[in-house]
Length: 333
Image (cartoon, rainbow, N blue to C red; front, side):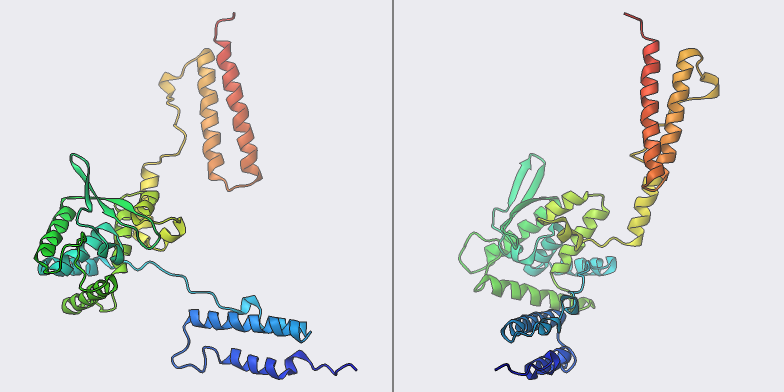
């Protein structure tokens, strides 16, 4: 005997699930975070798909579609402003204590706070007689790297060595003494930064990772290439590095005017003048080269499409014509 089948939307469980979906992020005070909302919706979608199969009601699977699940908000770079960076560094230098030197080291090497907590006492290495680098141990991405340092950073490491020698805890090979665990040390450093920001009149929600963003942005604005910044940060993906870089309008303007004033990829302009124009075969070759250059400059100004491709073929033909013309001046064998 066949049971009378109800419309999927009239199914009691479907109605309850529908009300639950409607209440997500609305009835909560404060509203659910986006990540929590996504997690709940993904689980609800799985329940609906299972019910659609168990109850032989395929329309249940359409109550919650993939496009109904919100996307995580895009993470934007969070470097400190120039003024915040200056005030914070000034306060850290003034204090000149263990926490101040540790955060200055983080700021000028771009390492994570957890990596700083894992630094060994012999983290400084001489790469050449006049150049040094700091060995950053295995971190979040299970990678280690060498970061070039200057004399200021070497002084910071020496100060941290001094504070470590004064600590009553037994030597364990680490640059920063741990009161109990690594997590306790990181928590202590975070509390220290919160105190420093409060004392300096800075926003107290500044976190240590923003110093890493500030370092990455500073390196890029100083002329360090993108692959090198990626290597300095220890990233395995360019997309991850892009989350750290704050490219402002002033950066775009600087790069634009530099490219216009010092172009690096344009074909060289033939050196021709009316007074020095050659005659005969040499003059013909000079004219062909000038025509090829003018054609190439015009082709590059066009958008990608059929006209640009057609001019590219014409440019190739001119190259062959110039080559054949030069053979005319070669002695016959």
